[in-house]
Length: 190
Image (cartoon, rainbow, N blue to C red):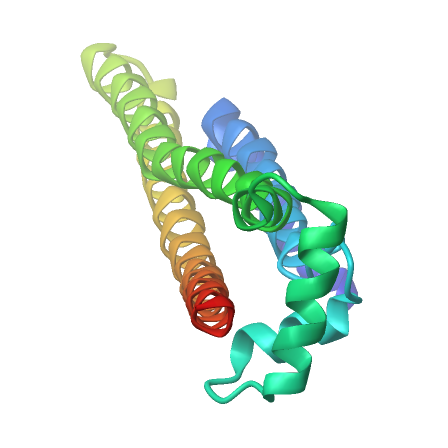
C-alpha cells in the first residue's frame, strides 16, 4: 500500500512538471499556516486566566457573575488604562493577521495550477507543431502536466479554503464571546 502511494507520488511529480513542485511547496506553506492558526486558536497568549478558563468564558452565553467580578478586578489591576483593548489585542490580533496571510496563500493555489496548465499546453502545442515521432510523447506529456497541475491546484485550494473557513468561524465565535464578556463586565460596573 505504502509502496503504491510512493510510486503514484513519484509519477505525479515527474508528469506534473515544475508546476506540481511549486504546488507541493505551496501546499506545505498552507499546511504550516493552518497549523499555526489551529495552535493560536487555543489562546496561548491568554493573560490573567488560563487558556482553559478563557475558552470557557468566551464560549458560554451565561457567565457566572462571581467569575465576571473576578475577571473585572484582575483586568483593572493588571491593565488600568483600557483593559479590553489590550486583552483583545493579546488574544486576537495575531490570529487576524494569520487568517489574512493564509487566505492569500489559498487563493494562489488555483492560480498556480492554472500556470501549470498553461505550461502544459505550451508543451502540447510545441509537440503538435513538430513533425517527428517524438511529437506524440510531447503532446501526451503536455496534456498530462496540464491536467495534473490543474487538479492539484483545485484540490489544494478547495480543501484549504474549507479548513480555513471553519477555523475562521471558530475565531469569530471566540471574538463574539469576548464582546459579550466585555459588555457583561461593563454592565457590572454601572
